[in-house]
Length: 276
Image 1 (cartoon, helix red, strand yellow):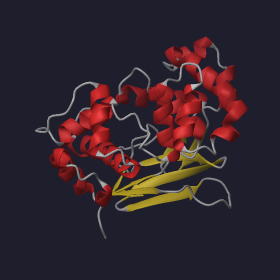
Image 2 (tube, rainbow, N blue to C red):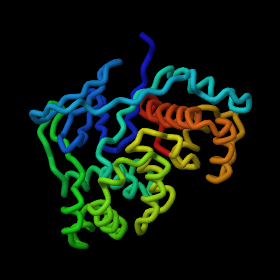
Image 3 (cartoon, rainbow, N blue to C red):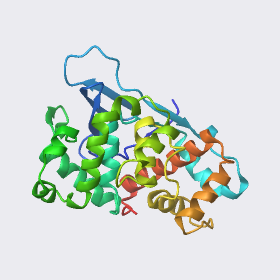
Image 4 (cartoon, rainbow, N blue to C red):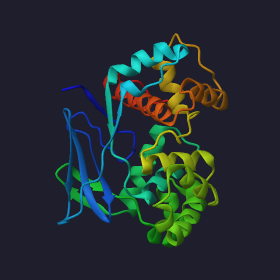
């Protein structure tokens, strides 16, 4: 069997060394437990449901760009061979996660997200322990400023409230949109700019061709995966170079970005590299 690298980029993933990575997702209104063990990704419903399990998206090293200028990076990324990721099946959580990642670094956003969910969301007992879902839009709209402050989300309250109101009105439409169109409609929401909209759309659809390619995480892991490769420092210049390497091909752009984030995810776990 070819090696498989599972992407545990979402802050809901519990990646303690003492147990396999685990998280819960809300799929078609029902909670599911997702766990990784070896080369197997398990999906188990936490209630009695008859719906199909959340889908798994896979990307393959064969679809990485062939651009000679990116050679050292591609060679390193190709060691992952196959990358698997569960797209976030709950659009509201994808939006929430992207908002909470605004301004702060990834590790801080992870802590804030977990505190936010544990304090105001729905907590379930699972074989992996107590895990929490994000508070739904109705709950968010009922929170006081003080309730936001207790979880370190006071800065994000305007965006979360605006997103909750818009989501309640339009989520059925949004959930059917392709990634590019979803980015556009999310950008119309107050305090959701291009970065947040793109990150949320990529998380929900699983299409990382729309991810903000100049993101600090992408730049950090690309530098560390290929330290001798000269890469642009600025986010816009980096994103432009990223697209050129992929020849603006959506699948290659998706694969390049997802593999880079997954490489960093595994490097941080395996080698204890501080998050960028």
